[in-house]
Structure formats: C-alpha cells, structure tokens
Image 1 (tube, rainbow, N blue to C red):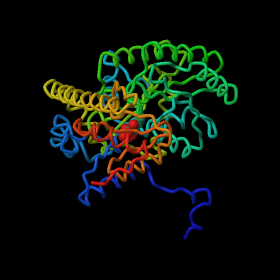
Image 2 (image 1 turned 90 degrees about the vertical axis):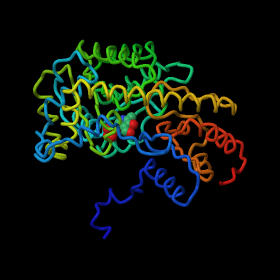
Image 3 (image 1 turned 30 degrees about the vertical axis):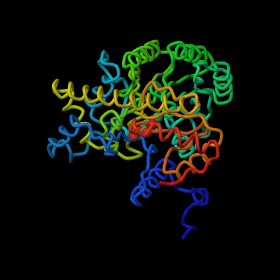
Length: 410
Ligand SMILES: Cc1ncc(COP(=O)(O)O)c(C=O)c1O
C-alpha cells in the first residue's frame, strides 16, 4: 500500500540510531554477553539499573486523579511554566512568553516553526545532538553548523561570523540553537571567554537582522561545577534582558527529574512581554498536540512547594553529579593510559572520543560488546550508563579496534 504514502515520505529508513544501538546492546545482553552499553542518554546505576530519582517518584506516587486526568491548559499550567523557568533563573518573577511542550524536543521544534520560515537554516555548533537533523528536516528546514570549540578550548569565531553573516544575508534572520552548558555529545561547556565571544558576535549580528538565541538546556543538573552553570545562565539572562537578541530556552524534566517518558518540557522567552509571541506559541500547541500531560506539571509543583523534598532532590542531583564525575574521570584516565588524548568532561551524560571512521569503529566495538554511538566527529560514550570499573575495558577495546586487532567476543 505504498501508493497511499505520499512520495516524498517513502524513503526514510525509520530507525533512530541511538535507539537502534541500544536495542542491539540489549539483545546481546539477553543472549548472555557481558555488554557495556553506553548508547542511551538515561542514567543507570552501577548495576545497570535505570535510575528514577526517589524524591520525584515519591511525588508522582501521591498525585491525585485531579492532578493527572483533566486536560491541562493548552499552553500548560502557568505555575508549572514559572516553576520550570525559576529552576534556571530563580530571580525571575515571570516566564515571559512560554508554553509547555513534550520535552525539550517539542520546544526545539516550536522554536523552528515560530522563528524561521520554511526552507531557512538554523545555526548550531557541530558536533550536535543527532535528532537536530530530523527536527529541522521534518519542519522543512536545514541545519547549518560552525565548530564547537576544540578540546584545547580554541573557538573558531571567524567561521561562526562567516556562517552567521551568510545566513543573515540570505534569509534576513538568524536563529542559533546553543546546547550549553553541558553539551551533548562533547560533555563540555563553553568557557567564559568563548561564551562571551559568541554572545558578542550575536550582538554584532543583530545590526543586520533579527537574531534569536534558543538555549537547549537538557543536562544542567549534572554539571561538574554548578557554579559555572550559574555563571553561564547569568550571562544568558543579561543578553535576554538587554533585548536586542531574542533569548529563549528549551527546558525539560527528562533528565532533570529522570522523567524521560513523562514528556514534560517548555519553550520560554522570559524577557518577552509582547502578547503576540504567546499567541503564536499557544497556536503551535493547539495545532500539534493540543496540550501536554498534566501529571508531570504537578510533580514539579508539589516538589517546589515542599522544602524537604526540594532538598532531597538537590542531594540526589549532587550524588549523581559525583557519580558522573567519577565515571568521566575514570574514562579520561583509561583513555590516556591507552595513548588517546582523553575525554574531558564538564557535565551532562556523554563524552565524545575523536575517531576517524566513527561508524565502522562503532560497529567493530559492538562486535566486541562495547556499544557507543557514532557521531561525525567520533564516538559518543554515555557515561550515564557506564560503570567507572568498565572504563578500562572501554578504552582498551577502542585501542584494539583502532589498531585493527580483532577483539575476541567474550
Ligand atoms: C541536547 C539535547 N537536547 C534536547 C534533548 C531533548 O530531550 P527531551 O525531549 O526528552 O526533553 C536531548 C535528549 O537527549 C538532548 O540530548
């Protein structure tokens, strides 16, 4: 019945690389193999069990029918939107213009639909989270990239300038998606100097047309140094307040609350007061999914209303930050022992190890029961699912594969 499918929708392979790798790892494990599965972006404990934060789940368990079953307002509960915004900027008393979205993914999609015309390009740093490709193509748009700073911290600001200028010249407006701090897939955050250089560039660019900066915040609760996250958020707030650049944020409870499946997020423009922005965003909600799930909104509202639960959540985050730092450091050292450059980590669930032929390398690693996701620049390793004690095996297996030694399958 292929003729029922419109021609331009017939040639997808339909598989998501990350979920495919994860399924392959799970099937190898079900066959009794000792797999190391670092493919998914979900937090696992050292026994490989899925982590659901207790402070969050205890609130979920207490939800009443009225907090679960009725439709939520189309744009989301305003108290939820404010609470989610204040998790990032506690001093704000308004979320400006904003709507609830199914996770940060929904927020990214709405930023495209409301800030660009079909056929236009959004600029982001490369490497980037793989679904950015499909998010743009599904919205009839394209991705343009400029390099993420190199490991030694050098930012190629000249390329950023050229790309931004060229986009402004051809389409008259610029939208930048910036996944910072705690970047997926590098696991790094922009240094203060690089962040300020980029923001200054965007300010310059705003002389040439409307410039929007949409911040994709997925992993901020899992930074090695929370004070650096605070500094970054304060810088972004200053740019938003200044008003020349439209600053928005894609917010999500997926990683923050380990509520990946609840699909709770928001797109907010905290420094926008023009009602037309809110009207446009809520029209996107109605025309896409009507409204988001009510239950996770109430989980957040319950949590913030109870100081003891807030404290419990903060200590769970502190615990997992420590675990992730230990895993990242173990991997960094193991890679260095194998003669690689290592994998510095500032935050988030991943690091990326440079590799010349990432896809072939990841396939050979999978044959040796180490599952990583290839990205154009290398191998993305989910430290969220990696035991520190497995780091040496990951590094030595990468070494064997890179050297062309066939690694025996256990
Ligand atoms: C960089 C980045 N942005 C956004 C998301 C969106 O996640 P969600 O839609 O579950 O909030 C993810 C999830 O993996 C991510 O890694």
